[in-house]
Length: 276
Image (cartoon, rainbow, N blue to C red; front, side):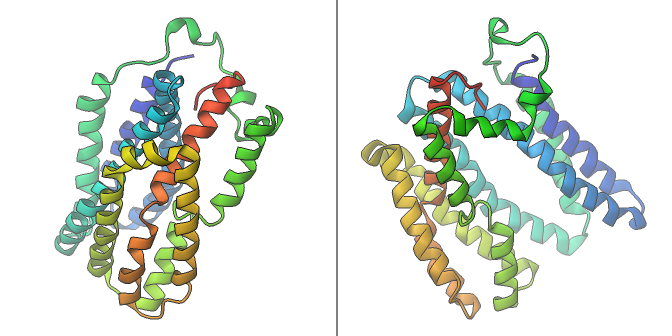
């Protein structure tokens, strides 16, 4: 009804308000606000992610490889920020625990005021609906993926199975596993996260070439094989240095994720499903 842009603006505005409140609130309110922010961030993150995916689908729905390349390039921002942010956050936290929150609030404000207004609207007025469908907005509407033909149904089944082992969805478990095995402090974990992100950046810079040679399906298959080997070795890690050794094996995870996402989006658009 309102297009993609308002949803993109919602996330940084809410993040600024929440992080700003945590910076100035009394100490006794900090933990409750952190808990509430953690729960609400799932909503703001998903809202922004869906709007971004929908906008990408609007622009590249007729070009499968280009859509995968664009998603991969966008995902490269995650490892880049994962290199910089843990180092900055760890340094700021050593000075004061609320300084990382203040830095995050400032970044959200800059995004809301300077970046989002310059993002073009990709959904034309003629394609917008007159009213919002709560049934269509429900997470249960994803069930329709199983009723839109054999190809989309197979992609949906594969996505469900893959999500159980994908590093994108087991990241918190991996962090707990690392903490138990390694005994690292906050700064050491930040350094390791930066190390991981270096390899992700190296892979994502070559994402266009990899997808161009292997195609979407080939890139997904490569990602699955490397994730399998990585998870097997991860389960055998017994000291901190082992995590450094096995990290390069999981370099192709994000490329496979972006290709799988584009395959679902493109196949869905062929059956008339809304982008995002």
